[in-house]
Image (cartoon, rainbow, N blue to C red; front, top):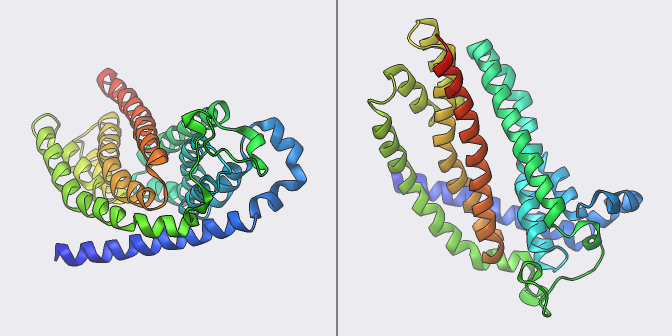
Length: 308
């Protein structure tokens, strides 16, 4: 049964990678970004954000994976630097999350009332803070508006961070086809490994948190709605305080991050980005995610500790 589920998940991943690569390659090759931002080119030069990154952010409202593929294609063509690709990709999560949050926040309020409102507000605020950090890094370390033209950043004695692969390697689609076996292997490894790591983490929490909180945390690994329902039920029964419920929700959300990041995001990125982009992207992605998740957990823990 697990093998069948893995094969189905691998097929969906493959279709997603190939569709993203085709869309991203087409948008870069047909200069959609140049046409879109030509009327405001002077304004773009002042905001110091590469136009490919801006275009990817706009596209990410509909599909962050297509936005990431656009940056991978532009990087492969030598039109953006490694930093543009890394921090531009990190900026794609927030525009996409806004769209999901508009739909999920009312659901959270409907399930858990004021607790759902607090929880959804913490998540959107956390995502916004991370976006602002990644945007600041993109502005500081990226190429800015200067890379929006046909300037190439391929290796010619330049710094390693601005070294680009040759466009003669066949473009993003060929690069993706060569990377698919590695993406399959990585996804397969996380498919079998992550549930076992989650189970081990839950075993460590057993005995350190209340049974009600543990139920909320465990439910979060299934679906956020299930965790909210569990938290609301425990809160209504007087088994947990509002601060304790929020803390349990955030702990479950943090634990589920590893599954989402390693299985979904990283599995996709392995298929479209070269290793020189993938390595810093993985480090910055996990680092910034955990930074704000742990900060939100610490604040919730402080509320729980100080509440009567």
